[in-house]
Length: 382
Image (cartoon, rainbow, N blue to C red; front, side):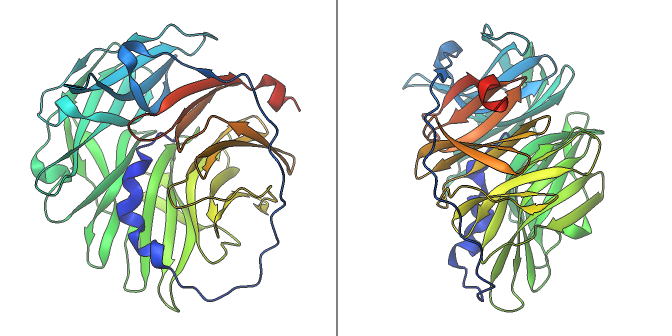
């Protein structure tokens, strides 16, 4: 799941926008392929006209987070439906906001296990209209806004929050925080209802010539979490290399992805079962890239801009990548080294989850995204 509050990542990638790198060996050219038109997508009608920002599987439920807006009043919103139903009946999840920013937040990232759920709320506020964060916990039958001190996520040393994820110890929040050499990666954990920033793992600490730029995070089947992003190397010019940190607790292993090109970044990771077999989607020199244990995959050419992003999910040995390209939706399906390209609902990808063979996809602009669904049984069987 990559739920995602991915739109908040801009603050950690500003440096990357002006990259000027030395030229490596020319990459192999991507294949130009016309996408196969994939009909059958259905737009999901959500309770109270909920505008979705993220979707996640929590226990036996599918949960959609976002907000509702009547024109006069904006409020956070959650809806849930049974993951076992081909056509779930979606019902609102009762919310208990208790802070001023909680009452107007959009719930942009979700994670959970069993009956426990954690959500991040984001709302603009203050003199500079920065994000004001709220943390929500509960179950699919009720979630409450848990007030935090201003210094928990704010103050002069604050960076941003990127995602909430679930590891074997419970929920954790991934973000950034001021260190000695810029914004280091940061991790918060709950102590009761209070969230406490943990000592920054060494692999997420900046140095004078290497800047860590986490972007989002996804929980993995073995109870670890993958943090996706990039390492910006300043030792010989400026080089942005796609990277994944994987771990739990205080032990996080940094892996810079191979064949990174002149500028690359990781967006979403999915690992297989309990082992180290992982696949990551991201961008590389302006096109979509997928890295697996065999290296960088030979994909059809899908160009991306800085606003585009993608999510990778899997079913057995099939990899499914939902991505946007200049506002148009695309679906890449990989198996045994081969990849096929299909159309998908248009708009920037916000989140995706694969339940059985049904893909639920949140895409569109921040204030007008929609949840779409399609059974991919025919595509995955090919």
